[in-house]
Image (cartoon, rainbow, N blue to C red; front, top):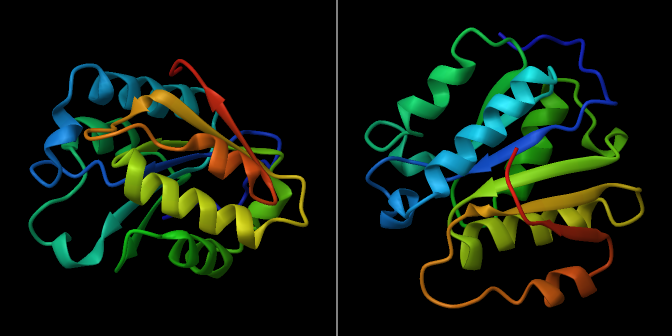
Length: 170
């Protein structure tokens, strides 16, 4: 159960689509380890952790147990299920249902796969929703998988709202 006492000074983490056997890129060298470091760092700072998964795979392909075991007994952790690459609406709706106002955070860290699809689309959706707020989204570059081509991060950064690229996990 989610602890309703969320400290808005603690930077939360959104982990997108780190489902075992769903994307081959979750197994790309270094990505899984970097995402693990991000989750451990969020737990250490007692921050909110949000796992985002495709709802159609929730019975078969779930987030790696090696990741969710880090938050197994952690009370500031939620799972959000989405139906399309952009999971921003589901993240916004579910956090509000849990009485969590993401606009109160100054920074939100994001990691996961695919950088050129789900991560990019979700961050763009969140940035659009929170464009009038002072929320900065940090995409942790070594904790996102990008299998085919470089993401046009400058496009994301050019949107209303703010997005910064953090080079290393942790």
